[in-house]
Image (tube, rainbow, N blue to C red; front, top):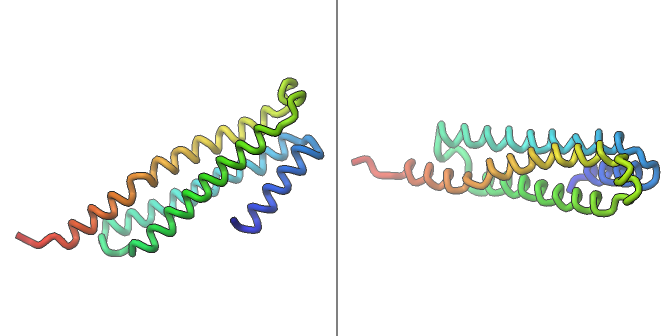
Length: 137
């Protein structure tokens, strides 16, 4: 995990638990959307390269890109669960945590979308490799 993400998580923790500024914390959390969109774009670019030239992307490069995306997805899911499970019940009941919950929900939609994008990619890559090396009849 990058230092920037540790800083963001620390800042969200401070905003939520010390300052109770749920709107500011929600703004930070919304940055996760950009991370998932960047993964999606980078993976999309790799797929476009593979479609153009099936051997353009080595398996190790593809594996690393997909592993990075999966790691971010899993870390974000765990972070969301940790934050939401430890919110003060009183603040939750008073609706103060709404912006925070909405930000996590919105980024969760993109997180699931990214996961759905990456799941079929290894099979698509393998099919492209088979086609590239299929003997001409």
